[in-house]
Image (cartoon, rainbow, N blue to C red; front, side, top):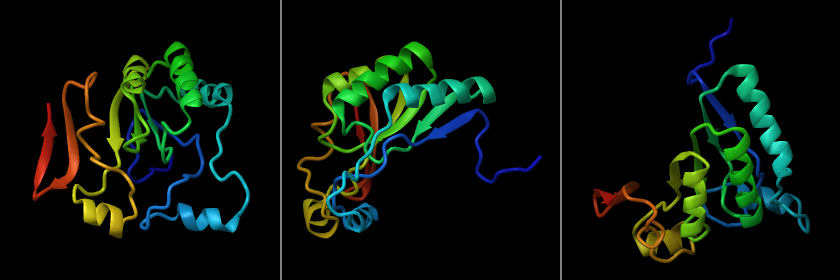
Length: 169
């Protein structure tokens, strides 16, 4: 058998949504989008197809947890809510996903929790508004605190804020 470097036993990794509509300077998505002008660059499979793939991999490889690598998992709210409902019903494994500040509401955080989401990565990139807006082209305001409200009871946000980690409880 062949060993895969960095492989984590029992972990299934998936990417359902392709593309991102944002123009962050450090990311390749805006350059890739320019190759296909006038086309819908952000694409989703049907929820049924995504969940069928998860069910098949869960059964075939006995995975115990899931990592979803979509650039912005919460971008399409209808797809997101339908996915969470089907995931909870048919897969129900702990999972991790990435979101962007401003794309997730309290209701969506509750849906993530109900669907067995154990960890969320929030792409803040910088707590410094000048760096975030002028250098990184991240047009988000107050990136951490408004996003991390109940139902989250405890959260660890990174990267560093003013030279020290930010812990929100």
